[in-house]
Amino acid sequence: MLRAVNRAHEQQRDLSNAAWMGNIVVENALPALGIVLTTSSSIAPAYRALAHPSVLVFFLFITLSTLRLNPALCRLSGFVAAASYLGAALFLGWRPSFAGGASLVFSSESGH
Image 1 (cartoon, rainbow, N blue to C red):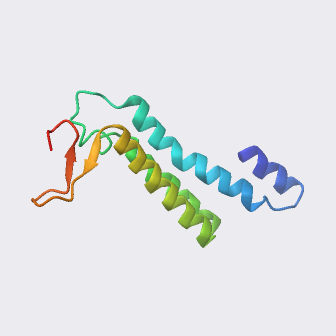
Image 2: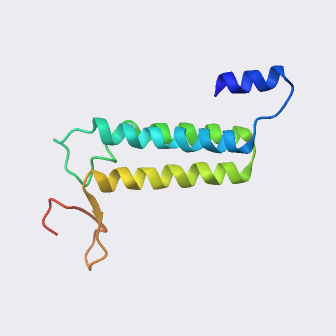
């Protein structure tokens, strides 16, 4: 992406919105992929996605998307980050519980 931006700058033209959208989707899906591929099975399934250091990378990529100053691309960034994180959490065993009780979170291995 840096090369594409540099080329566009040298040619005094703008990158297309499709290029920015593709970059945002890929960047914001990478932390979720890292969570899925490197999470330890020794952590309880309900906390695997939450306790992973890659979670902090989401904030970096969402913040970087605001530098473009395009509200639609910022919303896309937040949506992709949220959706990919939820996908990673579901893949790792987290399941929401809407049954009565104090907690809305439980793991598929906890017997609920």
